[in-house]
Length: 365
Image (cartoon, rainbow, N blue to C red):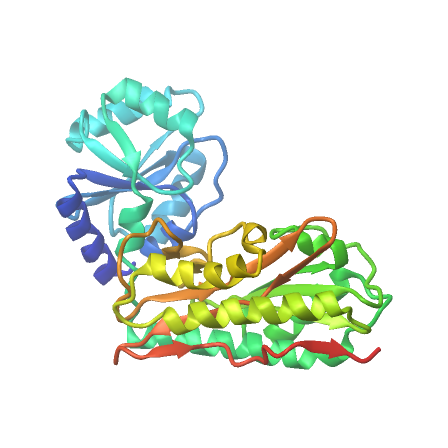
């Protein structure tokens, strides 16, 4: 249980007018409570109230597991498959003084359960993801140390795998090389997206069976975890020979990415960071190809606050950590993405955590 973060969350609940927060099994529950059971259609979750008291509600089949994980830190209430979940939680809400109150929801709360609970208890539920993110948006020096280490492992994995990439391999082969290397270097739960040739035009491409060919551009988006903190980096490399068009677009995107990195300083208005990358692409007539946000926060989840886009009307603060990753995406044709993790460290300096080369890499095959 991360007591200091629970305290931050409780303070944020009080400021935001929420009577409680519900955190269902997820990375968020693992972060705040130190455990996260398997989630199915049966409702379960941790309730954290405005006064700091907590309780867990789950089906009987999960009850002993949760009690063991909770270690007596809070009560665990259960219901069985032969009982009405809503009737049981209604009694608990009355006892815990949550009936008719306003409760925030985390990212994995299931709508069909929440609607039934609301109807049975009169509780009002609202999006609480931003509140949960705010409680951990500012990283400590120890957290920044882990983020640096996770980034270094990803960098070293990339350097080690580059000489092994050849035509005839599949995207899955490259993915496996990357994840295996990061785990051998000390990262855990390593993951990678590898999109080659025309597949690279899909930002979140999720298959791995295409065979690499000469002339391909290959997006590799990968990372690992160190002590709960994530890394996330993207590099695009090419199997020679490359065309003049590929070379032009790569250097255009690199210019856009570096412009956004330069704009990311303490006190920077976040929409200006997004605009810095888009201005470069717009002026070259490729603004329409950058269809995603310019970056996302990172920490105990791969994607968390602060979001780096035109809608996030806030300034960068010390302790914030985020990606800068504009892209050029032409579906069925080609795609290019360059991503670094950037932190505003506790001295107020911009710190680019990734050191892997960003110059255009053409593999001699």
